Each structure stands twice: as C-alpha cells, then as structure tokens.
Amino acid sequence: MGMTTHTAVLARRAYKQTCFYSCTQTFSSISCVFAALLFHDLQWLDGVSPSTPLHGRDQPLSASPQTGEKKLLNAISGLSRQLTQFAADVNEQFTLVNSRLLSIEDRLAAMESKNCVEDTNSKKRRRVHNPKIAEAVRRLHNSDTNCRRYEPEQGLTSPHNEAVTSYLLGAMSASPDLHDADKDDIVSACKTYYETVRRSFRYKHPDLASQAEAVKRSARSRARRKRLLEARQSVLAEDEVGLWKCATTDVCKMD
Image (cartoon, rainbow, N blue to C red):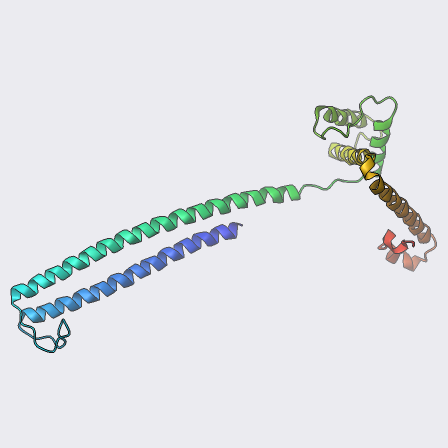
C-alpha cells in the first residue's frame, strides 16, 4: 500500500506537469497570434498592404493610422481578457484536482493502516501444542476439587471465564512439574481446551445431532488410522524409516 500512495503522489505531480505544459503551449499559441496581429497592424500603420488581407477580401483595405491603432488595442484587450479567464479556469481545475488527490491519499493511508493492523494480527504466534500441558489442563479443569469450570454459554473474555483461566494458570505454574512452562503456552492450552468444551456443548443441541455423530465417526476413524500407522512403523526396515516419517494418517485410510 505504501507503493500505491507513492503512485498517487507521482500521478499528482505528473498531472500538474501536464497542466503546466498545456498552459505553456496555450500561452505560446496566444503569443504567436498576438505577434502576428501586431506585425500585421504595424505594416498597416506604415502604409504597407499585407500579403493576405485581414478579412479575406480581394480588394485592398484602406484605413487610417488611428483606425489601425484602435484595432490593435482592441485585439490586445481581447487577448488580455482571454488570458485572465484562462488563468482563472486553470486555477479552478488545479484546486479541484488537488482536493480529489488529497481525498484519494487519505483513503489510501487509511487502507494502508488497516492492512498493517491485519498483517500484525496474522503474524501472531500460533498456539504451541504441548501434550503434557494440554493433559494437565484437562485433568485440573475436570478434577473434583476444582469448583471453577469454563462456561461455554459465556464468552471467552467474560469475567467468569477469565477467572477460570487465571485459576488454572496459577495452579499449573505452582506445580513442580510445570514450573518451567511458559505462561503463554499454558494460556494457549487452556483456550484450546475451552474450544473443545464449547464444541461439545454445541453438539448437544438437538439440531446438531447428526453433525455431532459425523464428527465422532471421523474422530474414531482418525484414531484408528493413527494406530495403524504406528503399528506399521514398528515393522519397517532401517532404510524405510526416513521415508515413512513423511507419511500421514491418510496413507492408512481404511474403506
């Protein structure tokens, strides 16, 4: 998005340069016309007939020096009015273009800021799955001595559920087996288990009975394939172990 904002700035400058070039060309054309008129009228004032009559007539034009000077002044006055109007139109166009470009730049800056926030959120550390911590969280949460249980009806950040997380974190940090565990990993394991509890709570709804049964069948099948995979690994030759480590449970999918 930074490149897009830079492109908008470059486009703005290019448009200004184009307008300036157009103005220069227009002023140059007007200057040429003015010079032609001036040269024509000077010839007229000196009594020299121009090669091409001003009005396109075949007969020579007769005019006094006062008449030619008056026409010259009128031409200069007309050109001056045209230049003044042209300058006003150019200033108005510049003002309109600048306001539009500023609006576009503001929108691009807002979009860039939004994308930066989304990129930051997408780069959050993935939850670390530690089987030891996960099992400890499950056992402590479901133990008879624990009176603080996660409530799936409430949000994760509700006061009750946050109190449950604080209790589990404190109890597990005080455990001799987990005193070296990272607090973020413990909190992550708690949230992962909460998702399991919330999913089980949802599947208890009568409308989701068929979906819950399908999930259970899938879980049983996946566990069966995992056991089969582990059993086949035990009978592999040494040169086949490295290749088999890349296999997944899908290899052992059973009909």
